[in-house]
Length: 575
Image 1 (cartoon, rainbow, N blue to C red):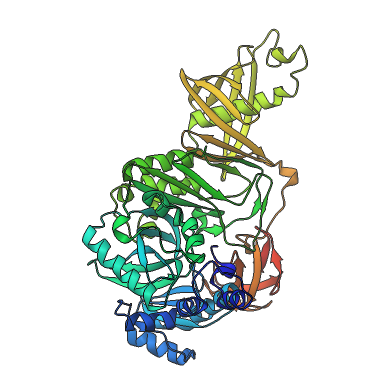
Image 2 (tube, rainbow, N blue to C red):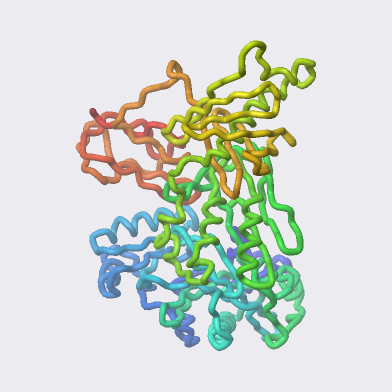
């Protein structure tokens, strides 16, 4: 498993007491490695390098603050029992430390039922490289090579690959042996992952060990040719490992992209909703999809935003990047905001293609990775327009007059269709010579000639100014989604003025569906710009609602514990 009971020492013990074989390590190893503070002490005794920090039992804010001041800022606060970026906060200034500890503790309790934290020196530009280890009950232990998981947001992995770019054989052996030593230090059996952070000078430090099979294990399977789940079953049955270290070989390159229900352009806020349309890449020996969702499913606020893993393999890194890019282009989802387009920009970025990655990659290149606000290309807009018209006509295909719907006797057919992209209103003027699938599309000063037909309910094939192309178009409520030329665009059909509602300019809206976990203000209270007025939680992550300017609170519409839909008024400020 990827969590839940797979890292629960008490569950492993109960299995043993009741004669049930637990497919995983001994409960003692789960307990030792499940605590970040205890595991650091064990690693120090095993001569595995660790990051300088405080891992003590005294959890008073005074002690934590004193130790953070001693380590020197920036520091990283981490949940003792944490993982997946939950309960993890970077603090750059001493004055921000107490609030960050409070936030980390709330996330830690929500995710792990334990509010203890540790404090470590924060390395500014490290790489995150982990080693897949495997041990049996006969004293054998091997590493099935490394994975580079440096591309992250909110300390949670986005893209993983194996082998790590630029990893020398000498460094691989050194880090692999350290991972094996870590596993042996706790009497490990089964599949585990030893995570290291690697500094710019090549020095590496133990970060944590996950006592289970990782989400990203498929990339290790693809480059090694081994079925790690089969290995788990064999070792749990008491068999020795099927191969020793010298038998293992790396073949080719594998990558995994995590598909999240989130909006990268809104600080990666998680999203929820019903999947009204989904089309996935075709699976093969080189393309694998692990997912638990289907078209029609509802994604709620209660779970992690990862909805799928897309994994590819090819003979070298550049070919793997190209294969992953193509597969992402074939992954189409409507009903949820996802990071698919963002993932494509990540893997095609020059720095990523060069293997120049670290945990600051997204932050450093965010201007080029996040969506520009450029207008939808005219060919895509023209196709969306013609699709909408053809869909209008398709309902009449049993009528003999269907082929004449665009025909006008004694004068030409012309119609203006309006779309909105963001706040911009776009007029599209459509005219035709009477043929049902030949159109002249005028967008501003540009005119395009389009011939098109529907291939199915969501696919349109077209010729735009003599260029043949295909697009997927999906209508959902008042929105139109166009998947065309390696990109996706969302347009809306303008709302009639008589249906619009007015919202006070001082209102603060919920940026996502979620639960209110803390209200810091009351009606009539004066607040300053940037002050945190409310805290919401969705998918186990917190989001602060801050005042956009100084003023007085007029109304607070929700209390702690309330569930809130997206774009609801949370707090109204006096005009």
